[in-house]
Image (cartoon, rainbow, N blue to C red; front, side, top):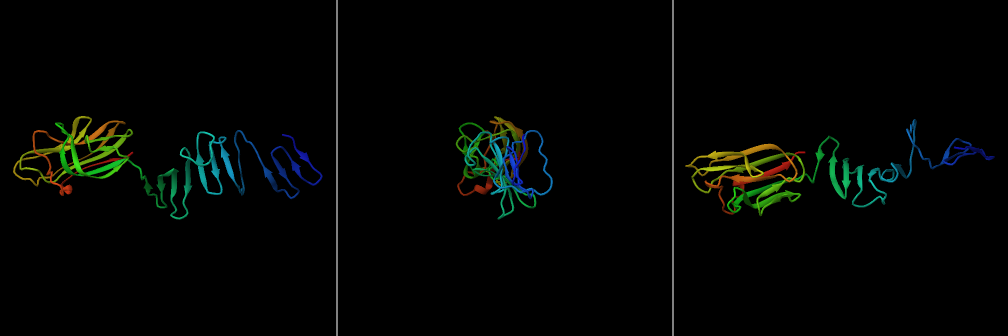
Length: 240
């Protein structure tokens, strides 16, 4: 890189100009290898990292990530920034996908999970069952037509099945089904409709595996009357 000393006391090159007071008045430097910066450095505009795919936007305090050359907006861009209003560190892609507050609490608003309440009916002749009320279904992975929660990704899933009041006084077997087999369940014997059964597991599952509310086909089910939603539920949450 050639340096030129001008009569006005400026030193110029292809990339910068230094005036007689030692101030850098223009910078357009391309750097390969390792760049080290010491002391106090201020920046206006964007610092581009890896050509046009990643940059720091100084005006908005954003770290912007992308794998193609596009404008700084759009569905394919990720932003990481701190919101001054609530102090949260945010990972944003069209909407907040993850937040971290000042005391370390993690927010994952789109984490797949569901809660269905109030036993309704058996799905055909199978041991899968449906519910009166789908309270939560983030990601729409629970299907209340066929009685399956289909795992969107591989991970560890927390699953709970509950029954608190039977349709009759005979035996019942209630629990958690997984890919067509009984994963966990409990029995109540004849004589008391108020017998409670509850199963909770953490299961490592693959994408497209499925969970369901299991009830033994030879015995009674939870009470089916509308308005008794609190007597049965299925809850599933992707832990990670």
